[in-house]
Amino acid sequence: MKTKRNKFLTFIFSLIPGAGHMFMGFMKKGVSLMAAFTIVVFLASWLNISPLLFLLPLLWFYSFFDCINIGYSSDEVFADLEVKYLFTIDTLFSYRARFSR
Image (cartoon, rainbow, N blue to C red):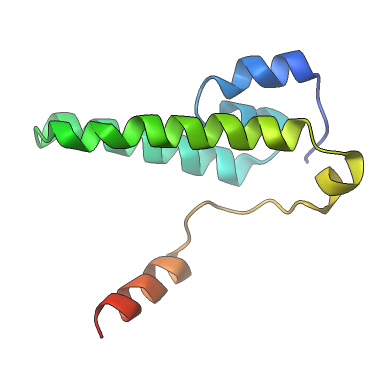
């Protein structure tokens, strides 16, 4: 259940990728962001691909500013937002179909 929360706590939780979204009730998006951040760290360290770590600031900035934008939105806009995953299987298959042409 998504609810508008304290703006200070939203700011504090938004410093951790995905935690601010989960704090506001956007569990699917928060888990997606946390998983993406963790997977990038894991793959970069396990496969020893340090250039992959350049994705981390992008994920962090997206998570932070999206959470702040949602947290400071008006009540009408906040109520209209839907809870959804950041990445879904359908979108990944549609990208695959486009690139395989």
